[in-house]
Length: 133
Length: 361
Image 1 (cartoon, rainbow over the protein chains, first blue to last red):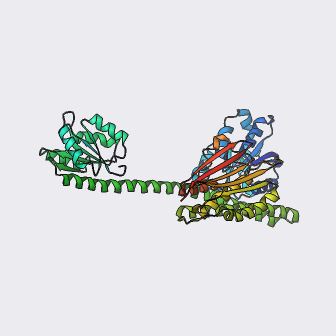
Image 2: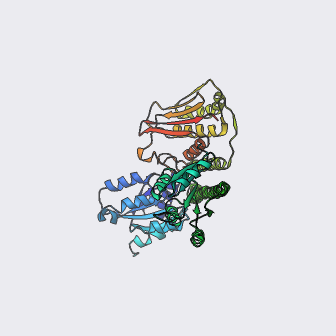
Image 3: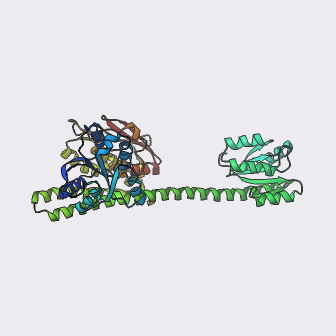
């Protein structure tokens, strides 16, 4: 099973690393990078609804629209759209309130702390993977 | 007149009011009222009244009752009770309950009143000093919180990225890929460095003293010109500096440079990529003892909904370029330290003008 990945992070280097890590999981069909949450959101809104599952790696701290604001908007979307996206929040924050705050969004399936390895990413994605044969 | 201590006296007997005012008006600004409504009106209009005298026995309510009422609306003025009777019980109770600072016996001696005012004034000043200090502390704490929070993002963020980049590079045998990673890492390093420099500015501003000297602006912008000319050339931006100074101007050179450099950095940073005719202009004019610094560009402009917030600590309005969120905050602190004003005039996608006006020191 392969996913389309969407990376939302304002730092170029972090996007690059995230992409490499995603590739290393062997789960990736394609990865799209957005340097700001607003354009990612409009991509999601415009995206034609297919059945393909999409994994979103979302940085929490970004200027203009941060991860929390992004989730506020995302949760307003239709069930059909939301069901397709598996959101993994990515953070450097050491603040517990941040981490529990972002986990409280129903559409967030997991939280990863930067720097993360492809192994850690695999672990977070485990629950959404189909059972091994 | 304005620096006299303001004193309010409430008494139902007109003669007392007249006598009080006659003997004290040279040294203090005296307001007199014959009933509570009138007294409250004075307090509403003059929140800087420092001392209130009030007679205990009045027809509508007692002095203690009046003070109890005043205290909830105007807690700062110091309350002193005047009493002709041996109302010692109610006076003691009022003092103990904190409604009254002290009391003066009627008929009073001017010296008693004067010493009461002076004592009350000292108490008032100590209290207001305390609240000023409290306010400063609150501000310092809130900035400290923001700093602690930002350390995890603005300092740890690039570091974590760099360490991730090192890991990747170590695993790779592809020299082109390693170089690609190095370029990205270099960007993170310089962002981190810029952030730390801005933070250094912030601390020197908060703790530093101003050094006032005569400023020659042609001299002051020499270094600025040298730095930004290189940048302008490589980014193909038309950069112009105009200095009009025909009179002496005294101010703090370091603060002025900080203001100019931060505004210019922003003007260069927030350019439109597709604009063929990129422009940045710095104009400095000293006229009739006042300095005007204007930095204008035809760049991306600032969204009107963010224009009120751009001077806030760690606020960032742009996704295009990464800033520290300290630059304009530092500019604003500098400008306020020099008793100046800063204005922003910006149209989205057309450009921005920052105008700083600073008076002669």
